[in-house]
Each structure stands twice: as C-alpha cells, then as structure tokens.
Image 1 (cartoon, rainbow, N blue to C red):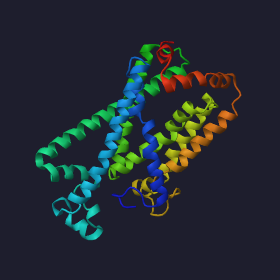
Image 2: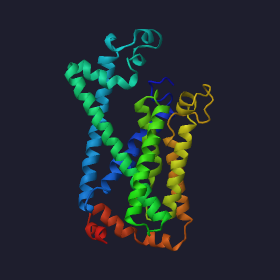
Image 3: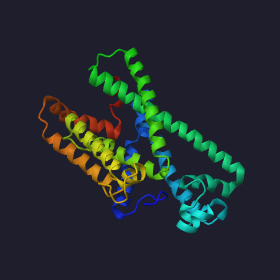
Image 4: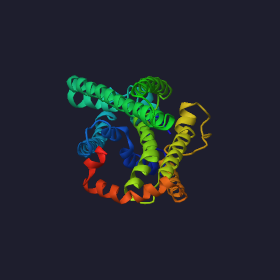
Length: 309
C-alpha cells in the first residue's frame, strides 16, 4: 500500500466503509454532547446539531477529493517532479498527500483562501483535541476512577486531580503517537480511529437502544472485546506493522489495512453471548428496565424526570 492510498483490497474497502458509517455514532464528538448540556432535552438537540454538522462534513469530503484530483493532481505547480516521474501525479503532491486540501484552497482562491483554510484547519485541530481530551479525561476520572476504582466514594477534588493528570497523560501519548505515525496518510488514520469507535462504542449504543436482552456485563465484556480486537488488528495490519514499525513487506500477521469488519463482528457476538449467559440480579434489573428506557429514547417522554432522578 502506498502512503497516499487508503485501502488496497475490497475487504479493506468494506471495513473502511463500515468504520466511517458506524464509527460516527461512537466518536467523542457525539458522546461529549451528553456531558455539556443541562438536561435530556438539550442533549437530544445538541446531538442532532452535531450529527447534522458531521453529515455536512462528509458531503464536503467528496467535493474536496474530486476537486483535488482535478485541480491539484493535474497541476505541475503542486507536484514534486522527481516523484511524479516515478510514482505518478496522485502521490507526488508537494508536502505529501496530506497537503491536498491546502493546495486545493490555493488553486481555487489564491493566497487569501489558502490563509483562510489554514486558519480553519488549525481551529479544527484545536476543537478536536479539546473534545478528545474532555471525553478521555471524563471517562478516566469519572467512569473508571470514581465509579469503578472508588465505587462511588470519590470526592470531587480527587476526580478533578485525576482528570488533570489524565489530560496531561493523554496529551503526551497523542504527541508520541503523532511522531510515530508522522508519514501516514491523515485520512487513513481517521479511518482507524473510526474503526475503534465502531468496534467498541457503536455496538453497545445500538444494542442498548434496540435489544431488550442486553445486560451491563454483556456490554462491558463485548465492548472490551471490540476495543481489544480493533487495536490489536490495527497494530498487526500492514499500515502499522510494516510501514510504521518497519517490518519487512508482506510480514504483517493481519493482512487488511482496516479491521472494522472483523472487530465489529467480534463486539456484537461478544455482547450477545455474554448477555445471554448473564443471570445475575443486575441482569434482571437491566432487562426489566428496557421498556421504559425504549419509550424515553424514541419519544422523549419522561426523559426530564429520568434525568432529574
């Protein structure tokens, strides 16, 4: 697989498509909408607006992609002549394939539009980083530390301290990974992030809404299986095992660039299986509360009362 390409075979293409379609529902950009609103009604409106904006972004990717092929890939001013002579114009863009959108702005609107798009890209990076930091820190400090480790007995000061430490650690980890994956195609890396979201978060969200048999234990184990399988298969894929780590070409244990097709299946099967096998008291409570939750989810009736409780 060339650094400028996204997939190299039909299975990887299908996996990438599944990741981009279903991973959206599990991204922190959507989930953080529930952490920054005052009540359930505001949460529904916030998620609606956020998903609408993301859908608009998806439409723009087609326009930007075809525009880059037409105006950038055919313009010698944006290409490295030496690379173009060997590999062709589509992978010879100056600065690498990640600069296609920036060069397209210059081709369409000159330096003025180039400066505007650069500013937008910078602001977008800050927004995404803040969203990911907020979601990660909230999950670690509240869900993991306060709920699991301290079992609901953590003080507010302790949660804030853990949240700050988690934010710093996540930032350092992101910087290190950014250095390691410096030469990877950004669009391809986005596909991997969507793959993890589609494998871990999406199956739990979908089944919690539409399947009465889901239990807490099934959601936890199935979600962990989806997360672990996605991360492991990404590491063992050619994009990471060969291009990033530097192993010999053709040595990757997992042959596909994007594992969403497989990791999503593992997550769904894991959730279904461990929910069926769960006969605990908590499982009975989960199943008994499904009908009321389903009505609130689909109509919003009683949502404000449930939030207050």
